[in-house]
Image 1: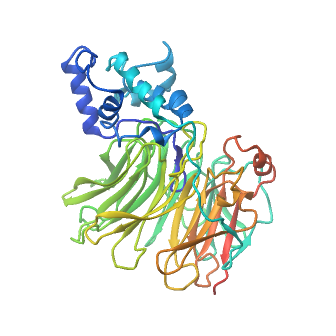
Image 2: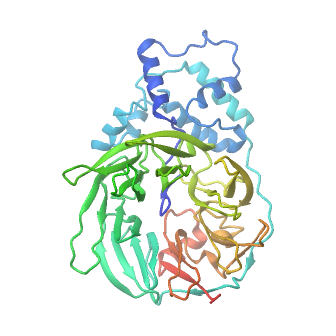
Image 3: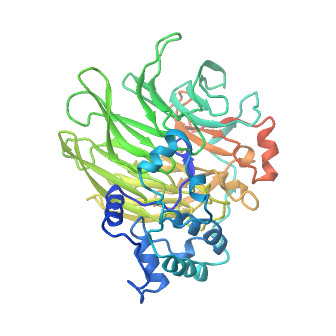
Length: 522
């Protein structure tokens, strides 16, 4: 899936094993027995039973109906086989591994065995099960048409254009202060509400997140945009004055995409939580400062796909916990309960199938009951030739008051990449702004951006602006950019891929790099 930029970075996720304990179990199994699972050991199991047994050991069991027959046959089953040491050709394994440090990280994780760890006949039964039961095509979701015209917003575009914009970040930091980062130009800029660039600085292959709060100002630099296990990302301070010094706080990061801060160990200092999306390897970690002033890494979950994390007192006991989304392989939302003294206990809140492409989430009280709900999007679609998925879209999971969640709303949105809640129309309830990086450009280009207006009773009506697909929106932020007290929206465009020929030339030649939906409520 794409590593989910800006709340996401285009991932190249695959059906990978889901947790460290499972990896250790599989490693112990290989050390204890000298032969793989053999067909004579489990002769009576059907293909469905075998799929349940093997696939569920790594992530939520993927039903055959989640993908079409072609995608299973040409991509996913092959990738599943790689994790069991089954390769299509003698050089397949070597082609999976990158050179240098990146390949060494994958080898150290022991993800791709040199020899099969499952009998090939058993694996063939699993393959047959999926190919026989997968549909030729996924159903097309039905929904009401998206109304064209936004009653609360005016579309503002910059007076200039860009060839092949590669915007990785848009961030409204304060009225008249917007951060913009472009991967292709390896830059981070500060822009005013009229699109005038006030400051510009180099940033290796793009900034994925900017953190500003209480005088702290930091930029998280991916290091490389392309899917890789290379660890060249870093977190740096941002000087507030021209010519000021920047300082590296954390480095050797694997495609980091999100950062949050909070006092996790009760020492009165802010610790750092970083999501390293990676590729085959990655991590969710927290960093605390040692007596010498150097931040040290403590891994919470050594898995790829860490997408976004909140530092929040989840249980109201006075200690800061961590709530995080993983969008690759073992997809789900996890809470890391702070036990004090730097110790955390993991609890899984929600699980999603590995084909979902979890792309973003927010913790927000959507129903005004004083409990944090979950606003979630699934739509990352870059692991294989993109297909329309009827389960892509925006979901709301309501909190019952004890941090147990039930899905209460689903809006189908092909390729949904981000959704943010705010009271845009100033009527006392929360509306939702959403973007799609993989919309149905052929038949539904209007779903590139969707504004869901809340009627106050948990029902939403969808609208968009004229020519919503004039950019390929991968970045979005909400804030008061003009200082008038209402919430504006900024969108950032990234020209990625060549699969949408109707729009590609338009995006690539004098494309709109970003635009502002200026709220006219006030």
